[in-house]
Image (tube, rainbow, N blue to C red; front, side, top):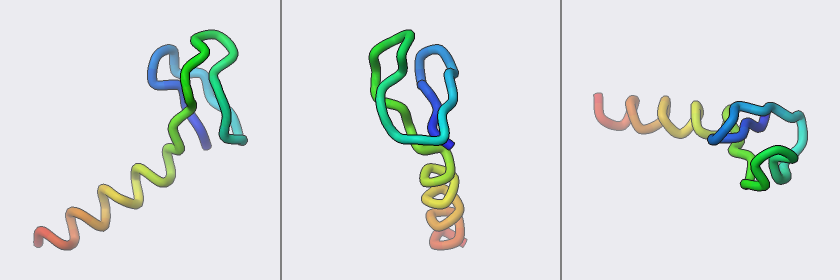
Length: 42
């Protein structure tokens, strides 16, 4: 799932937000990185 960091628009595909014209962020990728970092710090 991709999400616009500005307005919260979501999409199933990578790309640009149609409302804000900013790159969409891959939410699942961010969550995986955070979980990996937390495990490394334990």
